[in-house]
Length: 296
Image (cartoon, rainbow, N blue to C red; front, side, top):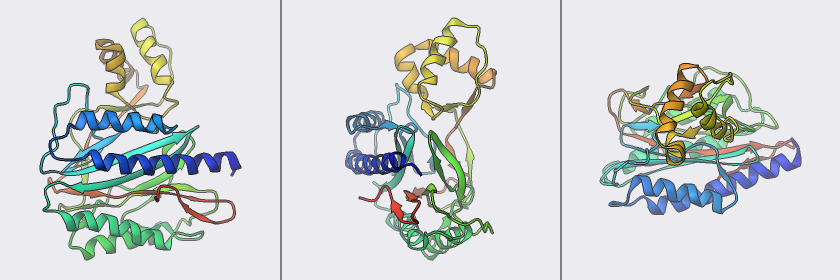
């Protein structure tokens, strides 16, 4: 791995960790979800990074992919709230997450995901099989009396690519693929009071450009130019509606119909179980050193 790229991963991880700590302080009863999201986004830029994906603040049974629109009125109450954020520096990504229990009822559920992350980090090294990471995560979460979310996983972190190989399972899925030098990836345990399966539910507010095609509409071309500036990374509908107003909705509809963008609807636990999350990003450098990029 080029030394400049390595240092960019390290910088992205450092910024991501610092912003996560900042975000934790904002998640308090009575605060606005939208304002909190915007303040966290602003902090990323202030520290010299860019969002690798829209800030996700998911409540209770929502596990991932919730991002507020510009008219969102949600106020933090007695919810279980997961904050998931990523930062990139010239495409090198640091991704981390943490859950805060404002209800006081799910402290052990928060601990289950966090402890699963901590235990999994202990075995990460060159040659570790992916299934072993999943086995540790599963066993740790089960020891608290909860279930891992089986159809969510950690993921590789390539340049300008937030979800690539390797897939880091949250259960022993039998994958004997081994970690190797030069890999960057995120380990991301999810624990739940439910059955351990999530499904898409509701309207998407997070999108990603997947394919480029000729576009006839001047409105859509204008919005598409802005989307191309995100360099293939996921983006929030809110970012576009703030700048383009109703034009953004028109353009997103057309780009969806053309098969150019991918939608990410919220992922919700099928039995409405409460979900918690913990995440760190890791880089194994060319010498085999394991660097936890997002650890303060």
